[in-house]
Length: 114
Image 1 (tube, one colour):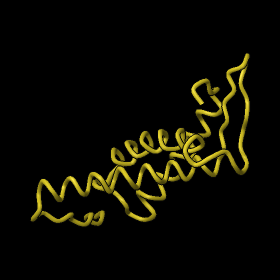
Image 2 (cartoon, one colour):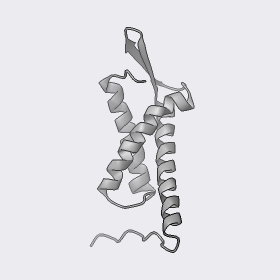
Image 3 (cartoon, one colour):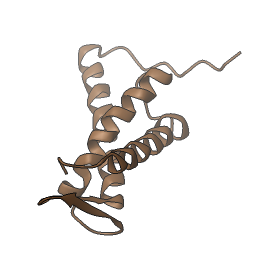
Image 4 (cartoon, rainbow, N blue to C red):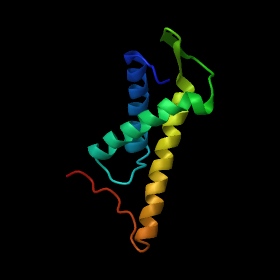
């Protein structure tokens, strides 16, 4: 996976953006609401998608390519699972750390737009 081409990078970016949007705006699974939180999720989700195929395996539809012996393998379903897993882990860890550091504080629900 280290020698990926630009198309694979974009595929992982799209996977991360979709999974991050589903968590941020669909399920409302975040620490802080807003675009900055979403963009940071996209970065973390891209890393999770990148690690998805090596961690969850090489199965399902995907792309295989490479030049001069530097083969890479990108499988879509493990990339989606990797992105989702790392995003859920990151949010859960940050929530846990927040509870440990500030035990009396509770997360405030987002205020509706006026």
